[in-house]
Length: 120
Image (cartoon, rainbow, N blue to C red; front, top):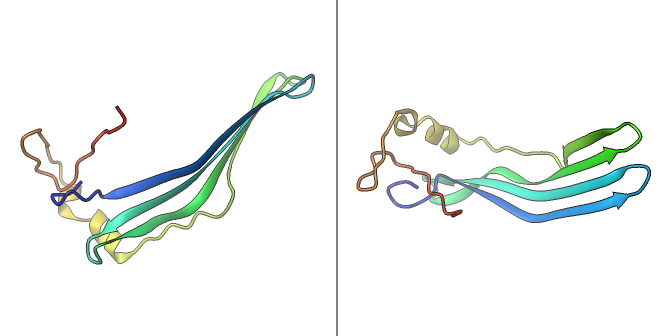
């Protein structure tokens, strides 16, 4: 978060699914999963969220091949990944306070952004 409490970036993970199936004699165990993801950054010049990585779906297929006694993995994106590099983002990434080495403490923050773990 910056001094106004606005995060630097936001990553959205949605539509997560996992399927586990057993195919006897030939392939053994198969695991398939997919997740939809999107990344945004806060554009301080326009005072709005702008897309950094447009919505895409990541797919993972794992399978145990009993004939060859090996595990096969395949990871791919269902659609192209579009990354938006704007002047506002490049200026933000090159900002002197992000490039400098800052120390944060509980009582005082010297950096414009800090990482908060709200996962537990």
